[in-house]
Length: 327
Image 1 (cartoon, rainbow, N blue to C red):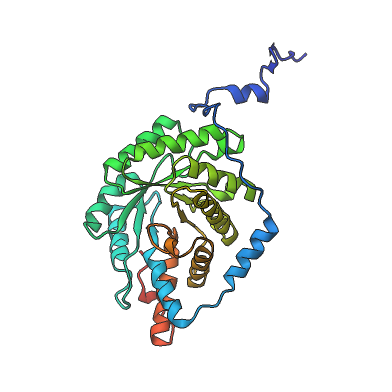
Image 2 (image 1 turned 90 degrees about the vertical axis):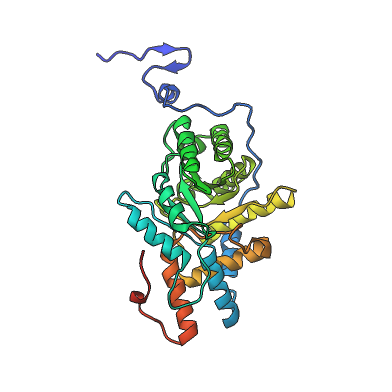
């Protein structure tokens, strides 16, 4: 005969409730934290507006200017277990000079794991191209806060100009918004002078309302940028989600807050998409955000398509992919 579970007050031993109280290596957030009252999101209206903005036509001269602007906003990224110093150096060279055939600006940054930051710093020198590093147990965020903060401090000590952190989606989805806020705020402090991009991993948050709330919490906690995704989860960046996050930034700025940057990452693969995103940024936040300090693309696969489109505008014909390096 099975034993009846023992009780301890209102908690049943062996129950799901007890499991939620077991130590996991983390801590609950501040119980005094009250999350912002984010406005409800009208999904149909959001998606219709995003689709409408995506249909804006762009003249040829503006198109070339927009494509070059997109290159200047790209973070070239390699975040694989097989990354090597040689691969990082090759990527840095491409960030400095995206094409041998076309006159273009350099990319905004390269993004690597912390141990490869010194390699990227040496390769880029004083060029002005930034070195970003992922941290805080990227991409899952499933480590104790002390480990995450050590990760950040180490990346900064190695020379990272920017830190891309991930929020604890488990904490967010169970409603522990205080923990999410505290971890972002403490990560921001650990960054020192380095800029902090906060990755929401929107594909795991489930709803537009959740994405809006996560955006508001990240901004309140001190994010310099909010970012859609790690690129490891689908769906990643989409136009409606990016519009929603831009609107969150707009609302904070309208309320007297500082300027916050935005980075869609993953899913932006074509020159056409890049121009659509720039139109959405301009219509939502204005020309002050059309700058690498305020808007980035986390999409390494995007660069070659933009270069092919620029070559087509210059010559009247598409060049093959073999004309552009894949590193």
